[in-house]
Image (cartoon, rainbow, N blue to C red; front, top):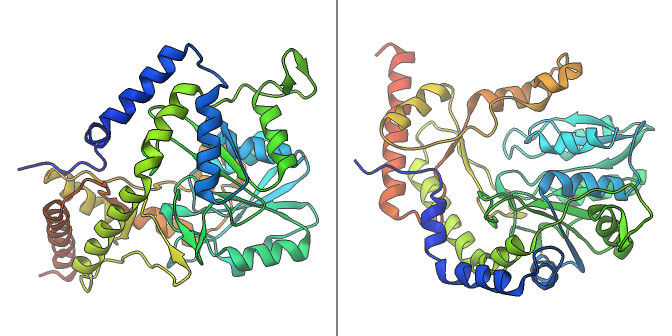
Length: 374
């Protein structure tokens, strides 16, 4: 029986082998590997794609968030509002600045931060809000931006999973003061290694991030800030330029896969993703919910179908955040116990999707029969 991988990066890259090979040759032949013309070209192209004025390539998505917070002067004594349901990098970026993450629960339907719950989390120490466009679906940004404006807060999008997504017609990454994204290989726009970027319309913030990423220097051997070494290298920038050219086509194929999943899994008892009218997601992940998620995952694995749990343990339950262990965040904890990401690959065909759906329904039906004692 043919296995269905969660995401086959080898096959994906083979489909665009020629532009990737050409990118490799350009960089190797140039002899320029750090902070050169490939990075400058990619930054310009990705800024244009994301409908912002500035893109600054950095080492990875976590550092993109961290450097943005540093650029805004956020540090010890400050609080930053973050989703309770997110990958831990969103929280770690805040902690790396010496600031305190303040968790806000998600909307149970969309899994994104609930704008109606943010106001009660704001204190005199709050400096910023970081909404995450989780699974490739934009958070509801208009009420978040309006609330931030009333309180004089900065809004930074964590757009690591949402390259190409739109909110009310506008690109993710252009919806706030600034945004951070990741080019981890499995992302919709993934490098062949680590990488990340900052997006903003604010020239001063872009320049500050450029300085921070390069040892605090804008002029060689002159260091005005205590900075970092966090630079998107020439080879990864060149690969990303090649992959940016096919991003919209691959995102559209993800939408087709998601539509097929949603149509075939409707009325099965499985909780499916909810897409609000304001969102045009890019389906980085297709996440369902099941009351007996672990048994369903085991069944699918036995049938050769790979799935992933995003995410099995919320940040406030991680050992590194033991000080938050007493928080009661029931929505995030429920999601962590029920979510399951089905295979999502731009090169999946209809037969792959039908097989995943058939085995998902079979696994869920078996669970229901056991629960009902049938």
